[in-house]
Amino acid sequence: MTTDLHRSAAFLLYQTTLLFGILAMPFALVARQLGLTLPIRSLIESAERTYEHADRRRQRR
Image (cartoon, rainbow, N blue to C red; front, side, top):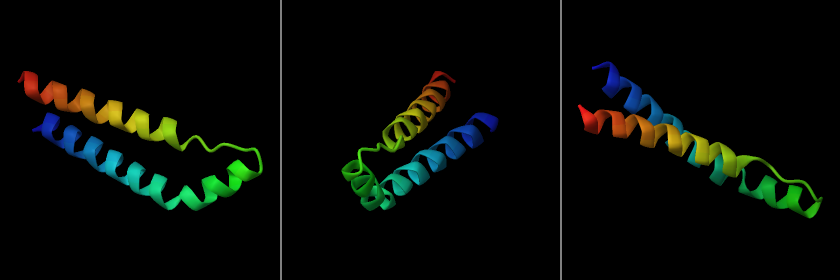
């Protein structure tokens, strides 16, 4: 039960992070023109690793 809750929360975090990345795209493009970078990619990759880790734990049960 706890593992399923953890996996669901990780999936929600991952999906929310993807949505944030999509919505932040115009700001990222403007920032890039100014020579700045936003750490959106690292946020998405971190959320993805968290979800995959939770999913692997569920599959081992």
